[in-house]
Length: 494
Image (cartoon, rainbow, N blue to C red; front, side):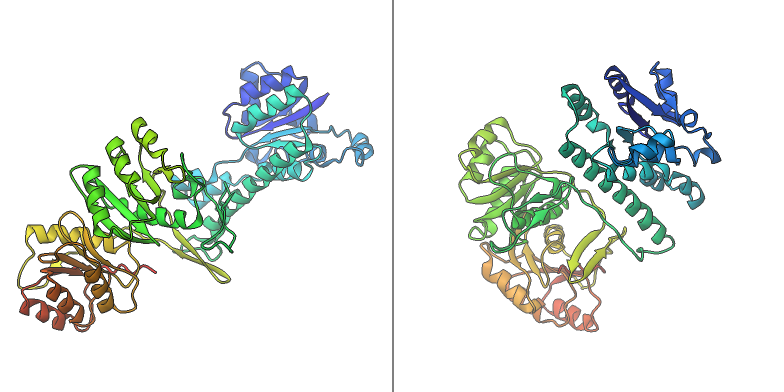
């Protein structure tokens, strides 16, 4: 008889699997909660303690840690048969196991003494043993793979390649589990752990990296990393970067909004009464740069909107949904990538550097908008400043943003000099700058940027403040009747 060991925390699907294995002439070994569920369902099995001759002990800490269990998983068929026979060790052909929910218990705020009991020992030991001996043992760690296991068994033997796939998934599972425990323990009473371990699945090769001579992959199952086009070419390395930037900026807005990104910087952002109105206004900000861009919107794309998008060469269009008519229209652009915009996942920001990793977390914070000039901004100016400030947060430093009440007018991004950023924004503007609001991602160290903006027609400005020359800049604003707001928060973006 062939044997399967079932030992799971997550009981989802275990009854159906147990019945299927019995129908396929497998004998079952189980214990604890898994055994209880099988017993209540009338599925025959042998208790681990009955098989090993040792009772479950130490409050359940010791159940499967026994040579007759691990020998059955690690024993090599054709090599260890004799020693297994001498010690009455059954070959275990299938292991079905998953782990105590350590990460879920962390989220519940359990204290360390309680969390310790959710560090699984027997489960990882079983899984690793079976995975090491994958040529002889199939190890299944996810309920979603139960149908694959049963279907394969009903068709015949489980192939070695399938066992290897199961084993790789099993080792990834235990690695992620150990990483979660390590990160938690190393992070106790610290803002960041001394050792930080991460794992991302769903790795997919990309055509190339930032440039054709570079190789690249994307990893991740959720958020932008997990996004795949429903139409068009495969996403590129640069597409993912630009879509991530566009999605982050789009999340700043509740009203209908369109964000157009090129080379990781917004080249047009606008709001409107409809998403079409917002898109057209965003595109008009910089129609030249909009060519070959990534577009993200926060409302459904309908047929009219799809027609407008199709008028321009767009690399990626991302939206929460697309109407059937819109999908049909966009099929005329065979290479355009159409992406259903996923929810942002949040979490820490990670960036690789030579030899390591930079990790950044943004705790809850509050801006403190304070008018520091003699004149308060008008309602329209304040609306323009708020829009410009949102865009500023997601544009490479140094940046200066000109905006009106509905969208960006000029964007100066990624300059070493703040004054140069302002000049570029002015030069690129497609609309009159008179009466506009201006945002600066960091404080103005001198009045020169304000003077350039005022000469172009701006009447209000928002910046973090905090320079030793703040008074000089405030005086310059008062002399020009500019309303200026300090926020107290800097938004460098490197």
